[in-house]
Image (cartoon, rainbow, N blue to C red; front, side, top):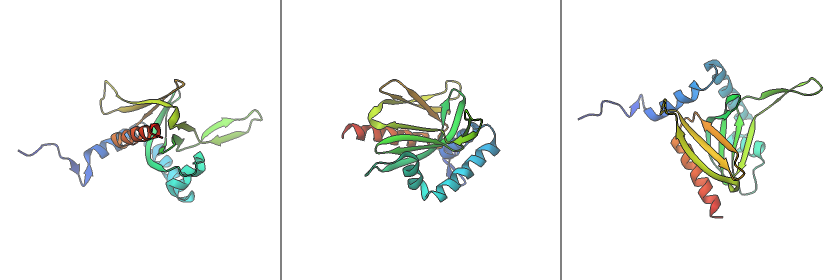
Length: 175
């Protein structure tokens, strides 16, 4: 008997298509999400690709290898922020797609990217979670040894990103 639910639609795995939908759904507007993706694309081209941008943004150490990059959202008290999650042999790092605006004491408006950098040696645990209302909404919590927690969501490929984070943490414990 043939499975009534296809594994792929027009050559695209269903899980990937669902991941893209969940990712786009978290953005404020589709137009804003598309602008952010185009902005990141331009930054990646100008910065020498994903490796170049990672090394520039997060001062990669000698011998540090970038293992995986995932589009996702970092959840903050102000709401989710779209960006890229970089997983390397030394750290997990996030940089927002779009710069945030702040006003200085002089009244000047400054635009800076929202960045988070967590050394692997400081991570206590990474756990998976899902929404009780919608199990397709997957979350990843990273807790540091000093009990700060970071919530990531809206991954295009959640399982693959979580697997790479787990592997990076495990490998860092063996060093």
